[in-house]
Image (cartoon, rainbow, N blue to C red; front, side, top):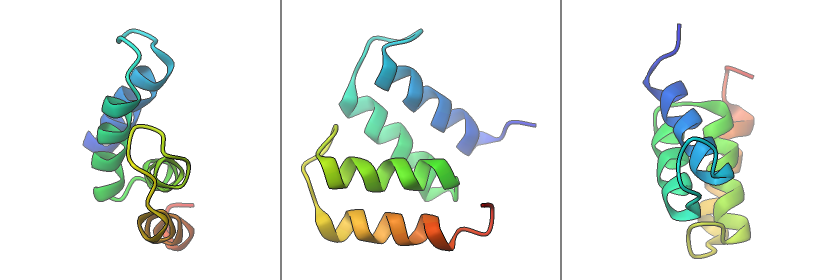
Length: 77
């Protein structure tokens, strides 16, 4: 069953793609970060990628490294 982190991740994807919701990189990042904070593997990768590439958030290499390392260590993979 879909839990809250899954739902947050799919809301983020919808904002990112502009599918079902108006396209917004800022909102996509916020929803990916919410999923990431709740242990969602793809949300952690997406949050790290956003910090690395400056998509929806100011680039921040330490935060990018933090989230990407968290994703790599995530037991759900």
